[in-house]
Image (tube, rainbow, N blue to C red; front, side, top):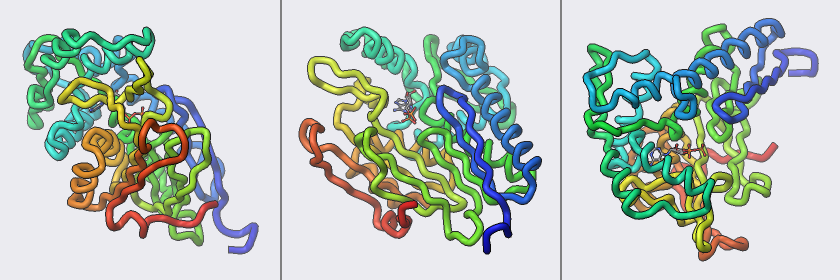
Length: 324
Ligand code: ADP
């Protein structure tokens, strides 16, 4: 459309869940755009209060405190996040597991102290992990953690879920051309006017660099998981904040995993799961999943320098677009 015609672009940013959330909308009405932004960010803030594993009084924390006890009635959002999480555990053979928190806690401490968690502590923590021990009753909307000492951590799915929920708020107010980005989790609605999709840069392995690949995205989501920012290096080995639930160890092979999926909850969780599964099993799983494409960039050798291997699902290339 010629300049001055068609809808205007509005952009809003706020920090929630420890990350910057960005909202971009195209619409004719500035007041409506602002209202949509308020609704979207308030929704994310509400989810943070429910799902945080840092705030001791979040609903998620209070549920974990009751592990080993009878079923607990939970909010719709908490139930839905746990239902989707459990579904992802089943799909990924347990590579994605929100009961991983006892192990994640040991790695958080390792990151602070710079020392590896002792093996016996990891084994003790692992004995309290297992998605099969997370029992959901959809009729009663209750959740039961069947083992005392179990704890939940939805850090691998919460930002994707929150981005989906934020976009839903914007759509509810009648704006369809919108994009929400919660750090590395991007959820897109209809494309900008006159365009086929939103241009979304894929974060490279080296966070100091600019994206070299761009997706053209509409009515879909993309998430990138990697150890670019949060990791601990001990005795020359770099451990990611993503943990392999089988071994209890932080991932050591440096990689960046990008997953395109129908929604942000799925792309966020699958990005974590594919990081754990690695390129062979991860890409096989992505090939089979409906509406899912994935790209895995792995550092060759010690990860210094430029040597990387890049692998992707068959349909990934068709999703790439021009840079901005
Ligand atoms: P971020 O976007 O914060 O970098 P990711 O989406 O990659 O993080 O998820 C990493 C977070 O997920 C960790 O900080 C931890 O809370 C949690 N996590 C780590 N390993 C797993 C796992 N195997 N399954 C599910 N969640 C995990």
